[in-house]
Amino acid sequence: MKKYSALLAAALTAALGVGATAPAEAATSTEAPSAAAPAALRLMPLGDSITWGVGSPSGNSYRDFLRGQLAAEGHSLDFVGSGRNGTMSDPDNEGHSGWRIDQIAGIADSVLARYRPNVVTLEIGTNDLNGGYQIPTAADRLRALIDQITRAAPDATVLVGTVIVSTSPTEEAYRPAFNAKLPAIVQAEQAAGKHVRLVDMSALTAADLSDSLHPNDSGFLKMADAFNTGVQAADAAGWIKPPVPVGGQLRSGVAGKCLDVNGGNSANGTAVQLWSCNGSDAQLWSAYSDGTLRALGKCLDATGLGTANGTKIQIWDCNGGTNQQWQAYNGGYRNPVSGRCLDDPGGSTADGTQQVLWDCNGGVNQQWTTLPVF
Image (cartoon, rainbow, N blue to C red; front, top):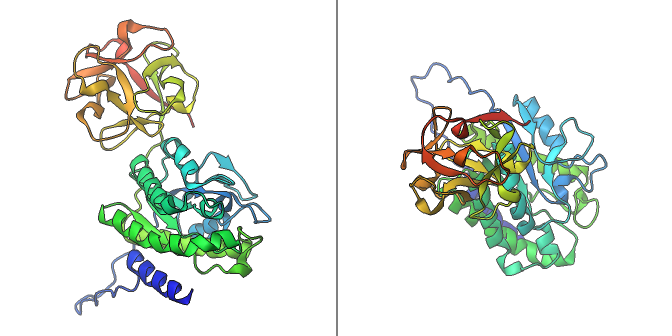
């Protein structure tokens, strides 16, 4: 175990960039440059029951400790997520008791598209290891999840926590080897230009547990310390950008109708249709800086790279294709490669009408107004 700890510590140091020597101050300098203001944070705590707060008497997990630290350091912040737990003033989070890596992956696209965090604190893997679930691929699945997060939230910095200590013989049989793979995963993400940092949770010991798997408040405080260190390092590196505007409904010029993903299904090829406005995630669209319009973590897409009048509109994995580019134009959206607009064919008012490309004409069936839903 000591040998493993030394190896992991060395790898963590390399991944985190710890220990680098700052250049000496120039001899002619007379005053230090003014420090940048702490970044505004829209932070999503993402993970399993540890994130949710099991083991914490208040239910606040590490989240309340972290919030207090960040506020004291001058950050304006908003925690976001579809769940609320704990006595803290801002209990929003995306913690799911009992969930594995694959289950978090199943909801990541949707919640990231809805909340658009600029920081994600990720602590996941305990249930995979403790349940002996597909152990040989666990680290690969975590890397795929990180890739998924960075695709769905390209504006976000992702802080990846190592799996905390436990007293479960099953988990402990796998945890050291799993954690030892994380530095290389994070280094590869950074080499690809992604804002991903590893957060070392090795300060927690068995004395910091409330049961075999979950921290007590002393353990949650140590987790907060570790995540806070990650936030400050990312901010100092200039990684954390201002939170981008969250999305909203795209309301049609046809009264009472919205742009909608059929059935709220995020599968590639799902039709984009007209539907009565209802405020669901299937009608929550966000414009990204790369020219895409996204819902449920997928991009608005002209089927088959089509450019002709009548080409059907669907959602598809965001891939940088010209058929996924949209420009604001004359009150609507134009696909520049085709020169054609997002169109409700024939000005239909029927729920379920699939949208198409059509010559831009300024008609009400090509008008789309963004209306925030929260």
